[in-house]
Length: 425
Ligand code: GUN
Ligand code: FE
Image (cartoon, rainbow, N blue to C red; front, side):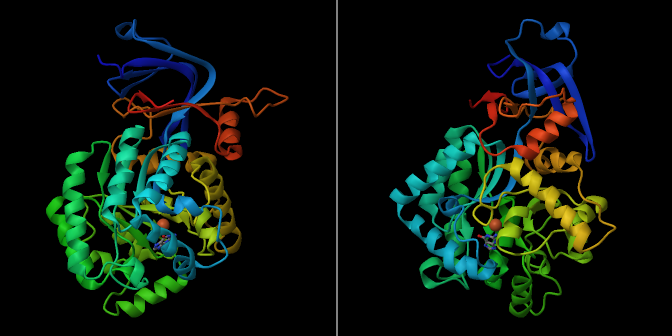
């Protein structure tokens, strides 16, 4: 057994299903070679003698999984949330992302992003970079060294944005993407390249077609944005008159494939047809409630997604979202679901704590493989939580403690973090 074999003792919590938590106080989590062997009341005979870490009195939960965020936008998080999506992109996002042609700037900015991500509750993440290959490789080097795991996308975009931030032709965009994909597959283990057409308005039909072919040939996964705002959906309709729905602009170009899970961020306006295409093609919906509120996109009907069995998780979507904390995102997912019930449809009940916990752990975690749970065989990503800032005059149940902790927590509340059994801090 290697160095990633040990036992953690604490109050252990993980999802059993979409709407049920396993709550096991004062129990033992056995990790062998980076994977869980399960949670036990007593240390089983076979595992006696393993290194033992005693976190008695502290809660231990699976690491949180961020299905959607933009690394280069971290630099302007908390700024410029007064415009709707399309104006916001032109005014704030593109001018900032353009700076990553300068490697010195990228080095400073990406160091700050990766440092913050390591300290955050996130263990797995799928990231958009910029269209620049050197800066994207630099980001992947920093992430690889951090111990976190996930996917990074060099963004592909050859139309609609200003000249200063656009690839000149579809062929240029494709060859930059392929060169980066091939070399980064060899260079990195913890972070894999993911094909990333920014969204349909940013990609000509030719580029989308080439990226679809590249996905099929290389087996690489795909991430993008889908049906985020009304103006964007309308724009896609006029750009692609032959597509009945926004999702057809990806489907018809071979971007979606049931054998290759993909991520579509937002899906706020995805109707029954789009949600069916997503289910049939192993597409994960990344719910990004704070971004949807900040840039006035709308409210995603997540209750409906869950009822229909759509695969879904949470995304911070910095800098449309201002925070990297998925604990805050859990709270916002709950809040938005309450507004959906109030303003859209009384049959769509607000999400329960169990459901938002599931979305942040096992729900999003399924995109990365066996992650997001302490079930035997799952990669052991774990957070030890620090409750010292949350006193209570009465004794809380474990169920109350975790709900309160998640809903009240900002950034600085994780005391130890493990990814695949490796301790990051
Ligand atoms: N759609 C295309 N690009 C972006 C982006 O950077 N952020 C968000 N929220 N939506 C997008
Ligand atoms: Fe986004």
